[in-house]
Length: 160
Image (cartoon, rainbow, N blue to C red; front, side, top):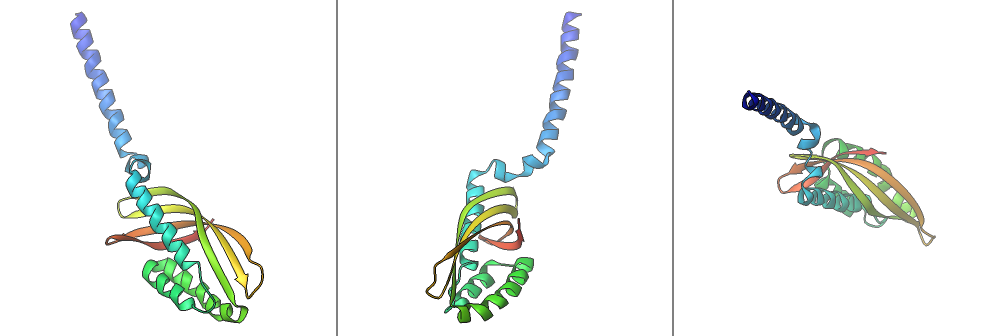
């Protein structure tokens, strides 16, 4: 009788553990590689850092270089929003002799699932007009990236 009770108890525990394990595997956090894949998380973070530094830094005498980088690294909604913004930059930067340098000072990969990721990026920007003193500003962006072949491209930019 004791053996039978122990067998029933073990069978019940086995079933309960199986159900709990299945629930954990199907949870959103289990699909988020940012929590478990350090290499993939670092790759996404590096891609976002590189992209934002390139597309948000420009010199008044060569805005075309920044636009070329944006065409290569931005897609979809991010590219459209950037094009609207950069139309103003292209018009004003030469007359104001404006140079902007952007440094990504931190990133946090919020989610990474398969071919898409969301990254919170913290930026420091220094702007110089002519020979004047630089002025500094900080920004936070929620960046959505999508894998395109061997690299990550930015598909969404949202101020935070």
